Amino acid sequence: MTSAVGTETSMAEFGKEERDFLPSTYGCEILLQDTTVERAKDSSFPNDAYLIWYNNDGKDHVDLVRGTRVRIFDMYYDKYGPGVIQKIDFGYGRTNPKLWGYKQPEKKKKR
Image 1: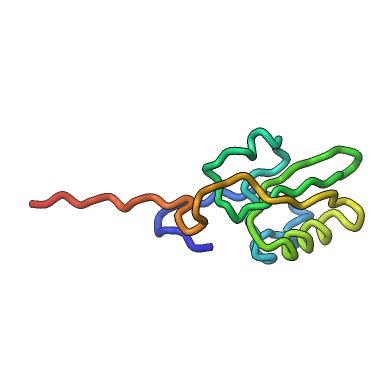
Image 2 (image 1 turned 90 degrees about the vertical axis):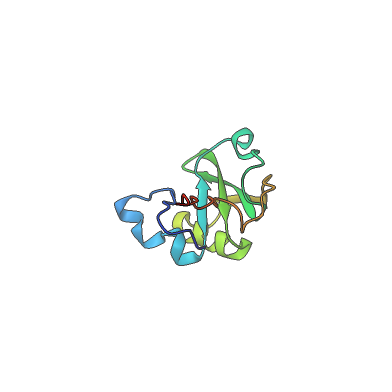
């Protein structure tokens, strides 16, 4: 994913022991981590994002992630192990992925 110069993109942070599992190495981007489905239903998210349900340490979690299903599965499988992933489903976003997060450049004043 590319971003305009001077803009900051925020991604979910992993702990020190989990630095080997950065989403960028899998070609993924975590938009919302450990969220609710109601919060993920925001239509301003890109339409190529997926909701993933997983159970870690007896707790159910929901994340909103961008990437291909195979890469998302690989990332969560490597991070949490087998039998953790419950479901991967389409997100509710409606924004074109090319335009998501785009900010118009400031117009210069004419002299």
